[in-house]
Length: 126
Image (cartoon, rainbow, N blue to C red; front, side):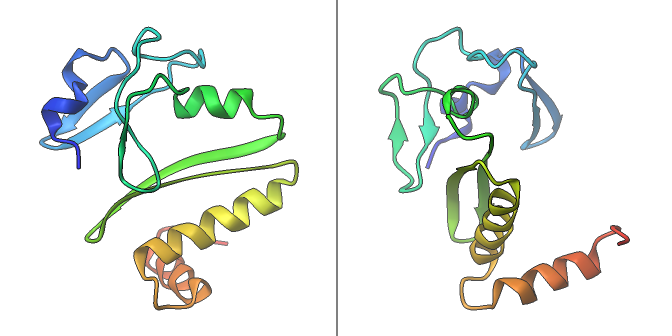
């Protein structure tokens, strides 16, 4: 797990602190690496720190031949997990994104049930 010092959030022009331990990260709309092209620590699905110069999530999505994609990270009591989904079918991306997120919250529950609870507790009306 990365410590706040390893993230160097104060040094990044794309990061604004909202509260203690809460930050807003902007892509800046350029698709370029906010670290100026240098390797920076990121999390992989296995929770390992990667500093091998691999593309940032934004760069990886931009380079994908697929028409649609998301790169997600979620922090739960079990830890931090990350997932990238790309496809030429936006419905596949959306469905897999929701299914993965629901399973990260409760791996024992049916994703549809988890999403129904989240939707009912939200302010979304549809």
